[in-house]
Amino acid sequence: GMLGSLGGQMGQLGVQQGALGQTMQGLGAADVQLMAGIGGLEQQNAQAQLDAIRATQTQEAMMPYQQLIRLWRGHLSITQNINTQANEQSEGEWIFKKVPANSRKPGIALDRFEKAKQKGLINTMAREGGEKFKVDAKRPRKSLKNLYQEANIPPWQRNAPLLYIGEELVAVAGIGISADWQTTQGTRISPEWLTNV
Figure 1 (tube, rainbow, N blue to C red):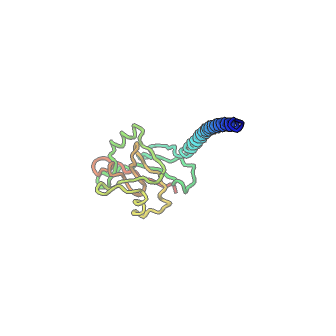
Figure 2: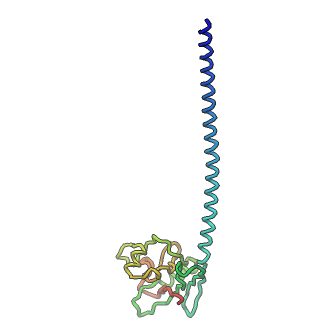
């Protein structure tokens, strides 16, 4: 009888150990979840901090591009208020000259330009890379990089800010006016980037 009861006790012990093992496993899982929870919070915090840093950097990066739009001797010009290094951004201004009546030179229709100006849609942005531009209605859109290379524009002259009307890239220094905005008829203006030498 002795062995039998010992066997029974051993069996019970086994059950208890088994239960203890499950409890340990349960604890382990909760612990892992807790850790995951903490990890998640830390990650969220880190992400929030990163976003805040990025936002600040973006604001700082945008600071130099506050523009001055002015009319001077009949030319409207956007001057970059530039406090960045020369290699980052060419110093200069976009001026908008009236195309002479007898000229065949393409330009932007004056009334269309004036409307955009009244709405405050004309702005300039630094080149970020990857912009596509179409100068000729008969030819496909190309990356600025390709257009600059085709036009033999040296790299240091590729830093002029791009002229936008709303979300549309309208003129690129040395390349020309977007096909969508070009006209060779009527009163028109030609945007030109002048560097301050």
